[in-house]
Structure formats: structure tokens, C-alpha cells
Image (cartoon, rainbow, N blue to C red; front, side, top):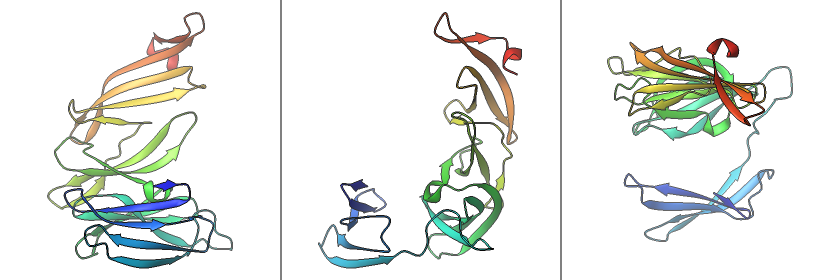
Length: 227
């Protein structure tokens, strides 16, 4: 976390206890070099850390863009992710084994990159296995989309679910997916609920809401009025 130019990272063990801290005083992302101190929480041992800036996220200058790999904050207990970015696009995701750093799988894709926060984890087909998603795009209003990759316990790899919809939310208890699609500054909203059958989204219910000036709120209308 960053508080008054003091940037602190906390290293946790498997029981979520603090193992060490890494602190950078007077942190400024514009600096070409930053210095910090790593401190062991148990022994108090310290190490001086110096980091030199290699690149900044954004558009590259020149005739050809350069691909970069960004390690992600989200991970599994045994695997971690690197997203391959080129300018403002995420063009692939690589999955590595934590113990060995061995590349397990590479998936090509295309979406807007969000730095180290591109990946999320969840059980998206409600089969008891953890899956992952990667941010795809912002749209008008609050609408967003992601690409969802499901785990195959037979191959131990991930495959594209081809789920479609904006602002999807997953209820693992009810085993339902909800979708919200806003239009026209929030004056028109479609809400839909899906179940998962054979790794496919199957529509259960779809509703339309329109803004009512007299009542000062969204009122449910026939679905045709939102289409």
C-alpha cells in the first residue's frame, strides 16, 4: 500500500502471517531508480533493495511495439500468471508452475491490458475447480467484459469458455451467473440470469428496466423495450 509516498509490500506465509516487508520511502513512480529495505519479520534482518525502471506501460514509440510480460497479483496455490502485453493490449497469458517456474500453458488472446490486475480467479462453471478470467474491455457506462477460461481436470489445462455478456457476476452458492447491461447513461438496463449446462451459459430469466421521471427510478418494462 502507498501512504504519503511510503510504499509497502507485505510478504505472507501459507497461513497468511507476515513473513517480511519491503518498504520504499519517498516513492515516486516517475523516478528511474527507487531504493528500499526488505525486513524479515521474525529476525529483523534487513537487505537493501535497488530497482531500476525498465519500461512504462503505454504506447511504445517506434515502428514496432515491444511485447512485455507482467506478473499478475492473482495466482493459484501452485500456479501463477504472466500477461503478455503490447502497447495497451493484452495479447497472451502464460501460466507457470510456482515450484519450478516451468511454463505450463500459453493462451493467445486480445483485450485491453490492466497491468498487474488483469487476472481474476473463481469457479466459473461451478464444478469445484478454480478457473481464471482476464479483463477484456470497457464499454459505454459501467459495462465491462472479461474472457473466462475453465479448468479441465483431465488435461490439467484451461480452455476458453466462450462465455458472453457484460459485467458478469458468479454466485457459487446458487450456481448462477448474473449479467447487467446498461445503456443511455443508466436509463435503460437489462438484467439476465443464467445457469451453466455442459460449460455453456443457458438463459434462465431476462428483465428490462427503464428510467421513469415521475417515479424517479428504474421501472420494470417488457423486455422488448430494452432491445
